[in-house]
Image (cartoon, rainbow, N blue to C red; front, side, top):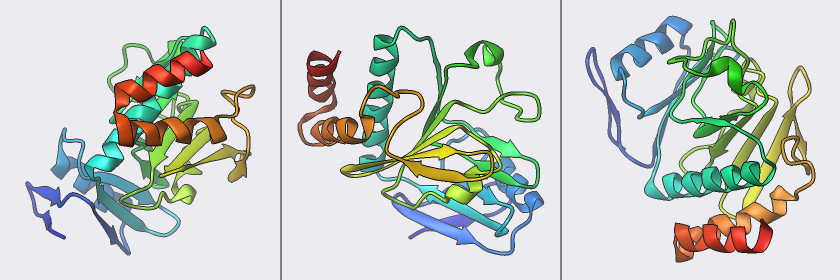
Length: 212
């Protein structure tokens, strides 16, 4: 593992995660400034534990999130819904949490964030759905509680876990709020892993042929 943190450089070798303890919100903001407009390493802040997580994913992580993103878009098209998809994105709640989901979707509140360069959660609604792929690291669900995203998906190879926010914390669920009539928990992993083994275009074509 190779990590560099100084006044003008923030780098982390691919496939690595570093957790910094006893950190403040100011420490987190400083690392964001050093990283500037780059998307890596991903940065997370948990105000309850006073920890900052830095993560740099492997290619297997990126390919799976790319497939998941495409599958969600296909399902939204099937439902006749408009959406806006963001990645990379930094979602912050002052001194409480900062998260950077692998991808997220605005559907119900899409109109309110059109044309915005940054999402300000003091005035803007959070995304309707956030998705994380856990290969390089394990998602800290507690950090998401301050952001209050209604639905959080966490994918590990072969398994999709769905978490719904109940107003205080996330509860694991077998069903999706956004796709209540589709068994995405069982359906999507099949095509995500197919994409990994046979290619993204092959998996997406078969998914649309069989399910849309």
